[in-house]
Length: 208
Image 1 (cartoon, one colour):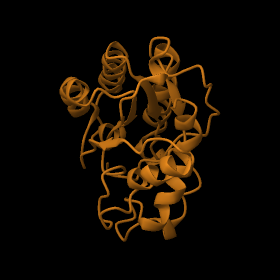
Image 2: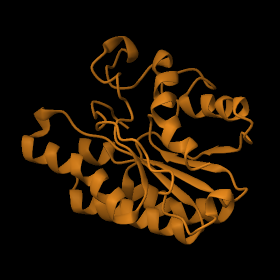
Image 3: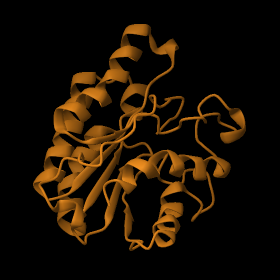
Image 4: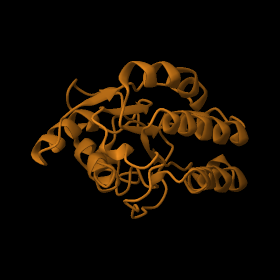
């Protein structure tokens, strides 16, 4: 992701949500992360990103550390939609975490298309028996008030429509603090990664 995109406000997840058929949360498949540069360890040492830290968190809680990181720097929701079927077929995940949309905003893409892509990715994940966690974003006001507000609503409306769990503030507590960003002031640095995991963990834990 290019990242002057900032996250939405926090929301306490409902453990009964996630979007999969009943019983799917007990499936033995891995957690599949489909994201952009925020999840792809862009610009930081391998093994220090929040997804890698998630494996350790799972071990600490007695859970299998089976996590597949299918994140790609620069990925849009269109790219995720194109790849999701193959990923679901190969990985057979129990949980899908979708961290996409930021690059759509940075490119000024049509938000109806962004929304449609997210809904379709969630639908396909549910059809494959997975529960879904959506990580939300927002853009700074300089993108234009109407666009920023509309973008902010995309994630909440998609989660509400699909019954997916939502983490509205993926970068809660980080977005306005330069010490947590690389010199480009866009991508989180290594110090930010534990906090990113902390923002995701409560909602993800509820789906395990």
